[in-house]
Image 1 (cartoon, one colour):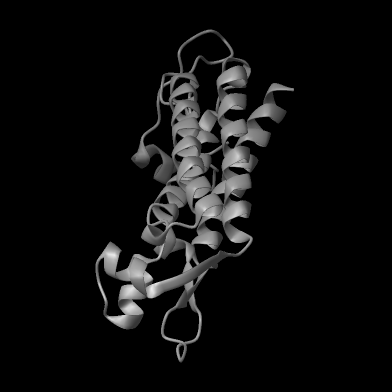
Image 2 (cartoon, rainbow, N blue to C red):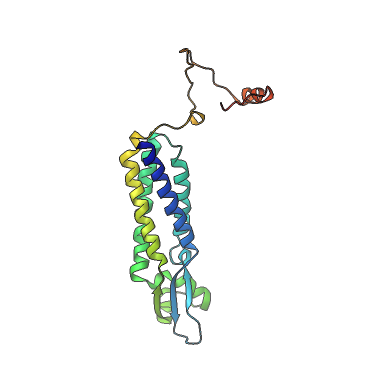
Length: 197
């Protein structure tokens, strides 16, 4: 059960991070501008929510590191996962539920050359949302659940494998075994032995 909890937490974090990265490239908002000759302007997730891509990439890295983290780092990563989920969740919720003009200012400025929140607000006649903000919000909920799962079960997770340990190992006869270094590993390879076994 504990190994399954770790695998599930890592999988949920990676899935949420990947969803965030994908969502940052998709159209979140469609803006109608007062100039009737102009087509509706699509606004990507990265433009509507600039922190989405960086925090999603951080989430992916966190999920990968969690797979080999020790007990103390598991709790730190669990808390960080909850903070990222809450931050992204609140910001995404604002965009998804209210479609504020502030989320489209950069895209409108790039398309029209008109800058400033008030000037863009006067120019915009309507903003509609696509499903992507809600999909991202659901990913934030999944990420939050993963963080809670980590904090609840991290103390029971099995330790990392032998290749991640840095302390001296004890040989089967009870004597501490000598740590090998890079030169020892090369020597073993030269003799046709596998140093990772």
